[in-house]
Image (cartoon, rainbow, N blue to C red; front, side, top):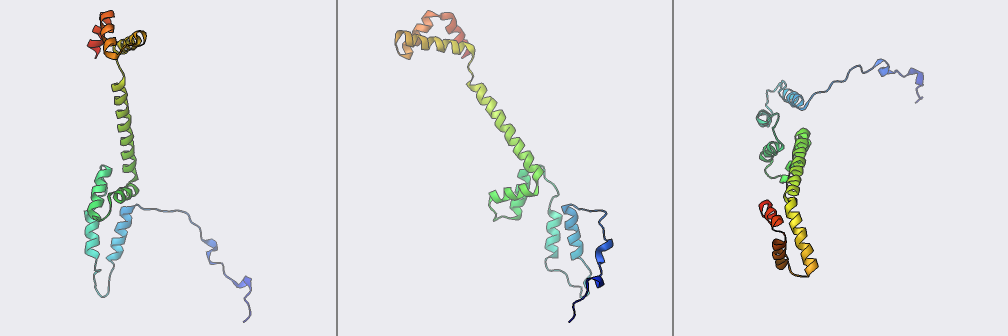
Length: 166
């Protein structure tokens, strides 16, 4: 056979241009799939799983308040799935809830951190009395109990402030 010349080829897509791109969200895609599945069937057969698919679609909530709610829903849909996989799937399907969940966790950590720091901070009177006790321990080379007794007798006003602060 003789090879065709390039000049005889027709460039079909020459005038084709994309002027607008459209996108739809997940519920619209699910609805479109259901409509396609409900298509006219000349044999009037019903899809075997149509009722199950439509029931799942109708029972599925469109949104959740928290990531835990989404995880509960997904774990009821997939009871054999491990909780770590359920959480990963919920994070993929609901990224905004996952971000809120992480932000809340960071806030809880910061709150607990400040509470722990506040609990470890001692009042000034306590710090002063403890420094006096450690100074007496070094000066007199005695144990803590003896140093406490001597600090109490040497500085009763500081001891009173220590007791009221502690």
